[in-house]
Length: 110
Image (tube, rainbow, N blue to C red; front, side, top):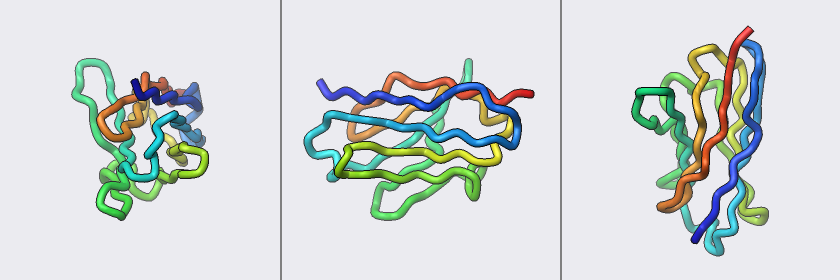
């Protein structure tokens, strides 16, 4: 079973930055699109960034603040999050192929 392991979440003040990482043992990592999602209690999981289709797309609420990247050699994906806002507070998940990671909590609060 493919494992995805996320890290990098935590508590940060508004305006701060965090970098989330998603590591996998998937053998064909480079052939799959990466998606980053987030979910708050009582809400559906929301796709916020993906590199499907050869270009990287972002939902409007994070555009210009978040950056998705990947290192195929290391089999890792990253989500750089800058200028964080309280409304960014959520559990963040990466998705590669059919598999989700376990999620990492991001809390933006003063």
